[in-house]
Length: 121
Image (cartoon, rainbow, N blue to C red):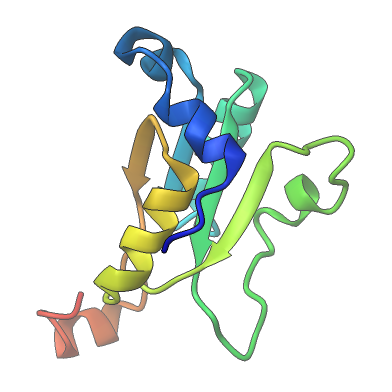
């Protein structure tokens, strides 16, 4: 059987109105310029922000370092490793986070590569 956390059970027992009042955002592309600004805005509005970051050999989180550096100041920011081409991983993250809002800002950011691999981009 599947093990479901008590937090998920609590969320699933909410009425539709109560569920929508939750301030839980999931952001792809959280490490980009727009993602980092959106994260700051949502945190300032009391949201819990979950971000999806790519696994890579370099930890490319420079734009959000100030947000997760001090988890006491921003305990409502959680990072998840994921790949936008891996639908199983995305379904898993969404089912764990149960976001009320999803912002898809993840994209290929290298101009030449974006033309060379247009379909992937």
